[in-house]
Length: 306
Image 1: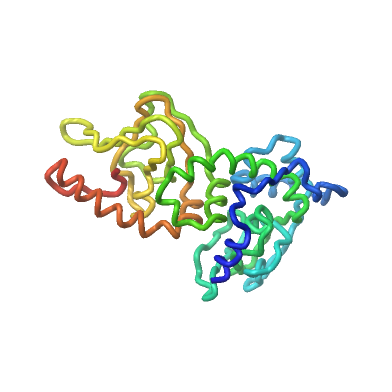
Image 2: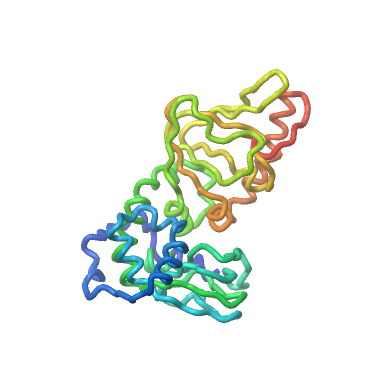
């Protein structure tokens, strides 16, 4: 398919000797689009949850806000077409947008009045990997390729290098294309927990999943007599994904056995990025049910067990 062809064109982008400091696209005047206070406030609101922006300092963030311009969209407009060269990165202020991928243009995601898209082609210097079409009228904030690369590529590049080893250590992620794994690295959020901390609580709504970078995590289920440990996980392990697959509350708690470092993936990014791994995760549900019957002698409400 189209996407795979582009993905294989550039071997490992992880391994590329890209030096953001020496990017020749850094030259040239900075783009500044004047905004009213009201527009700037709306833009700040739209970008506050954009993962790519989280590692920017105040000065970089102001430069990003200066450089973005408003784009009014009509229902059925195509914002991005698969296979085209990347021009802009987009942050959604309002409206619904559908993402389609592959030769059959399969619908893979709907953005509902929030989120961002278009970063892949700009980050990895490859053609658009998906088509994005507006389902409703809406408003977008756009940033041109040069500005995006100058400011965001540096922070994304650092983050990707940081998570390269972790992603290599998780067998499930071997099913992802190279660019999909890099997109996953960009979306991960580092979190740390001290010995004894509870990371997730049985019965809570699921907000995301976790990959373990260091330390041990104990997965426990509440029984009448108290909590029973059902498994222990270390680096390369992951947990919290099954409640996302089954759309049910957490059926187990997770505790830090010692100091633990995890990479957190929120539910939106999970749905957008881990589609190719979904079959593996669904297969795991059956394995856990069998494991629990052995431990407890009966079948619990399995949603998030490891």
